[in-house]
Amino acid sequence: MEYLSKQRYDEIAAELSHLVREVYPKVTEDLAEASAQGDRSDNAGYREARRIQGKTISRIRFLQKVLENSRVIDPDVLPKDRVCLLSRVEFTNLSSNTRMQFMIVSPHEMDIASGKISLKSPIGAALMDKKVGETAEVSVPSGILRLRIESITYD
Image 1 (cartoon, rainbow, N blue to C red):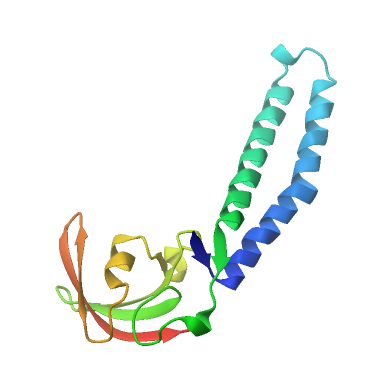
Image 2: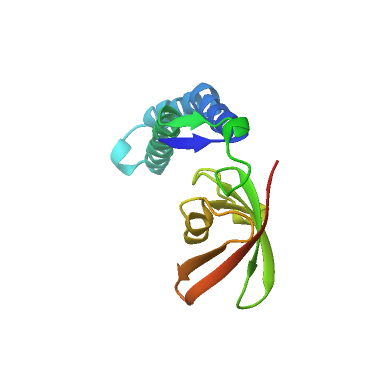
């Protein structure tokens, strides 16, 4: 079971709808056109259309499984005093005295560029259930990081 924010759940549902209603019918049409051009064994257009059809079907099935196995999390029921899903955590790396801020999200929402890390990542997992002032130790390839939690907020 995965928990998603309402926004991410809606984004996945919209992508699935777009693939099923618009992309897949176009792919099927392109495949039929390429098939009508003759010998399939020597038809690069047909092979490309089959490849695109396979990728589209694969993506549709993946998104269906994500939605089947996901639940929208209600941020109002989450604890506000410790790090949990959908919390924005500001912490200090004690070895370099560097401050960082990330939002803890499900793996399907992870986006480092926009400051979202997965709760299953080493840092995300180490921060879970910690309170302000506590220190988390994270095992990373370069060694052990010690992170002190400075603040926890919610969007």
